[in-house]
Length: 249
Image 1: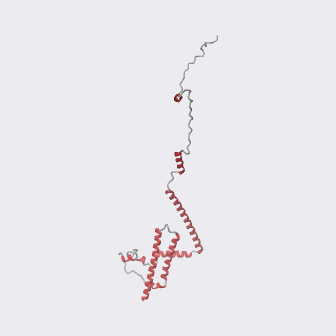
Image 2: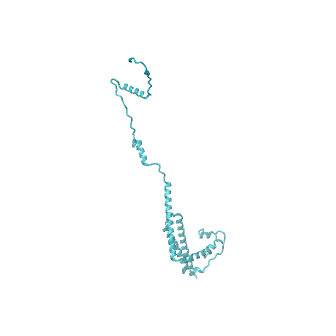
């Protein structure tokens, strides 16, 4: 009897350790999904799923193994139910179960899934077993094609969104470098500017015996006279019928 009890105790310890490893793996995977999703690739996700699947398979093999047969001879049933908060239970369950009441017991001591869940599982299993392998392969290829098309659409939408984000954040161009250099060169050294030809200046040669100062005064008077309007000259023209003093008779 003591040997069976020791074997049962060791088996339970192994199960508890495996369940803790499985819980840590699930917590680590959830942590990556929530906080490291930017750097998480699809191969990494598959590796985490493979790890969880392997731990679940090993746990199932241990439950079906020969060393755990004695555990099947024991029945677990609640001795006392209380709606009050149990600190010891809270500590053992890492604050997941606060009280061992009528609401918690049916979920934590259940040995079979709910009737509705079990019915759905049976229907899905029957439907999966009735599918012909050729049809299953065709459906799988179709699903892979649809998934790849969806990924292409998502990638193209992401690229367009990134381009729009870059365009919105970029500052608009307000000047052209070549035009700026052209304006600076024209302002500093007059490069590229067309100079208007100056009108020719006429100078009158000095009169003999006339000084340069007198000549300038003459030019100023001439310019002043040119600037004025021409005066109206009135002339009296005699009539044509006046007698000529030398008119022949």
